[in-house]
Amino acid sequence: MRKCCRSLATLLLVTAGGPVLSQTPPELAAEQVAQDPNASAFPVGRLGVAEQKFAQGFSLHETGVVTHLMLPLNCTSAPEVIVVHVTIQSLSNGVPSGHALMSQDVPGYALDSWASINGTQGMRMIEFERPRLLLSGDYAFTVEASGGSCMLWTGPLGDSYAEGQAFIINSPWITAWLPWNRDLSFQVFQRPR
Image 1 (tube, rainbow, N blue to C red):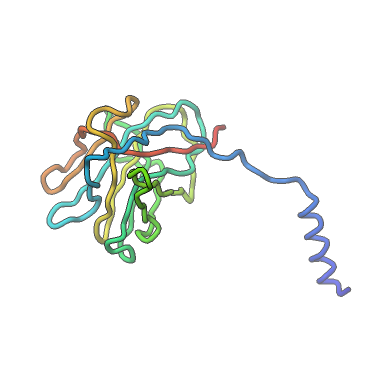
Image 2 (cartoon, rainbow, N blue to C red):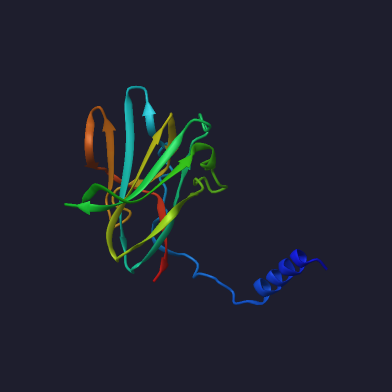
């Protein structure tokens, strides 16, 4: 056997027989999965002269690495040009601070939520390429889209998630985060420390 092939074979044996390098799988850290069966989805991004953005406050009860979010988003209207931008922010006076602790851009074609048999919309994963350790406490995630609009399904009217508030920006009329009359439908996952 040639020297290069013996080295590769040895490397494969060492790798196969070596210690397994696994991480603890992410766990559900916060969620509000109820959806309003009587409401249509809300547009995220540009729609005519308006541009809508959404945010949702949530609580982390443990310190850990936030790995991903699950959201009921569908961007099939123009998936090849849409980019969804998601951030996790600290809160300032109870609203998103504008200071992104983490962010991720997702192409629209990856967000193709569809209705299940029971009529609720399926969730789609937004995985952070650079997950970050966040201390237990209160945060918010924000969702916006460029290049078109996506559809976001939300929770029912009222306060279905007691540990956080949903917010909306609908520029040019509303240019700062305004509390909204319903919570978003979401899941936040973290790998506990």
